Amino acid sequence: MSGQAGKLRIAVVFGGRSAEHSISCVSAGAVLAGLDPDRYDVVPVGIARDGRWVLAEPAQRLAIADGELPEVTGGTAVSLVGDPGGRGLAVLEPAAGVASALTEVDVVFPVLHGAYGEDGTIQGLLEMSGIPYVGSGVFASAASMDKEFTKKLLAAAGLPQGVHVVLRDASGAVSADPGVLDDADRERLGLPVFVKPCRAGSSIGITKVTDWAQFPEAVATAASVDPKVIVEAAVPGREVECGVLARPDGPPQASLPAEIRLRPGTEWYDFAAKYLDDAVDFDVPADLTPEQTRLVQETARKAFLALDCRGLARVDFFLGTGPDGADRLVVNEVNTMPGFTPISMYPRMWAATGVDFAALVDRLVEVALAARPAAEATLDGTRA
Image: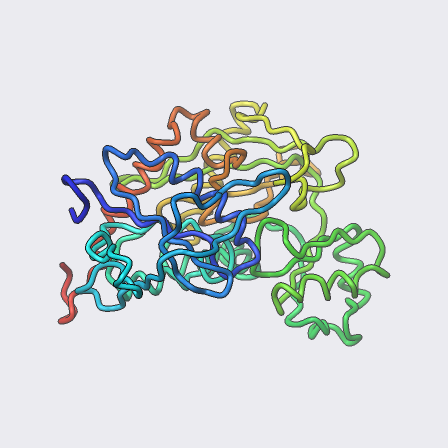
């Protein structure tokens, strides 16, 4: 162990270059508060919106206050050491006198949402650096971040998907008329549809379209976040989520499911409803029959394994009724680094299942360290 007095030194990395920068900060605030100071030597590392890595200031605000979103600002400049022999962070301002505290890191907790964090990019950097980290690896992170390929892999595993069409760019490359779906696609999708950036989260850039005249503007909004856009048919049913948590040995576990219920006047679960407005109710656990609970948990585990996830994931569903009257469960999305904010469903579902926040974080670190051989190939190609 590289920390003081035998403690594990854990670098909590947050912020980042994506549109979900502020939500990452809020998640990190909860993680930092939940780490046991008697067990962990914690190094808070913020990534500014322009990509600079800094040792975050102790007074850094990591919460939403009066509707104002937090962000990474100043701090001592640091950089991840690419050489596996370095095993940690290098201080770019040696005069700050903190180099000895940052020489080595035992594990990284990348509490990053969206591009440049949840999409396999930082996971690849950490693999190159030989440092164990919390969460899924490069492939699962990248595949789960891209809604198109999430759906393809889940469909290959036999898991049900909603009707959708992928547009490669803002002009709608799959359509004969730029920016407008053809008649066959419109008929297949129906209305309403949700137009989304293919590789983004927190409902950023999403538009609910109830009239095809709104469609070109909706595509432009989504394409301002990601040049690849996905158009999804609305799926009737209850919005249900389930957390999956890996174990150092043995199959992954699924939490009790939770349900999101929109209050009257709230059309859908957009960014404001998620983080700013008092617009939803959360049932944790969800009011489901034992059979429905088992169906959700089993499907969540299957989705986790189908995408080769590691550590943790939150699987989002629509639970409705099929033509035969039986329960119909449709997978909506898989999040490999779900929110850890005070209102986030992932830690709340596990708390309802009997795993409190501190124990949850401990488990994630334990699983990351158990995966150490995968991250520590020696230079001659053998495993450490």
